[in-house]
Image (cartoon, rainbow, N blue to C red; front, side, top):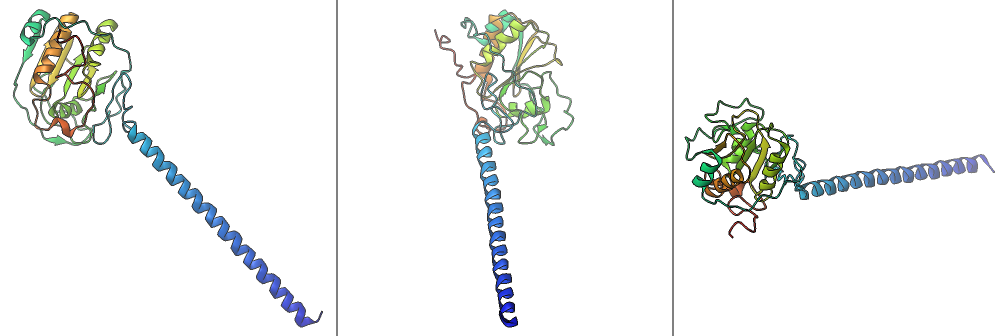
Length: 266
């Protein structure tokens, strides 16, 4: 083989090697692109699942019936109460005044509206005129406390915004016996749509319930008659007060206006 032929052969081999290297580089780029696309698809699938399950800030159900995502409020990191409640006794007293009288509860309706300015998240709450509060300046969206049962107290700054959307917040002393707490949880489970339940150690009542500008406070928990009073309070005031529409803060499930209690009308 002459010198010229050897040179041509060398160049041909270099060209083949270069083409193979380019092909391998293209295959590598394709594999990387597939990996990126697969990761993106997986991320989207996870996001869809989370949203379908009620959002990353809520469990979308369970015994706590947390109803939280960017449209429906936030849990704000508060732990849910997943305990199974005790089924409430049959309603005996449907009239709010009579039930409250027998239960020794104080009912205060159409209290002063203390304002509705939106405040940034983690702002120190204002000095509300009642404890628990029934109105006043509160957290900005979407940090209104999501509907649900909680095992620890949420910030009232967040709860008050929920009240403005027609919600009812049932609150109890953490010193109540476990059985009493589970009876309240059982009542909550009959009307968890647009309702909150949580302990509150900053009030003088054993049990209280608040809607916007309305309050029922019971210094002693007396069992079934106290549940009757809270249920009657919910029927009278739920969804009827506050400057924001109930429907704008989406909810599902039985409500205090129509509790899921088959024997309530008997």
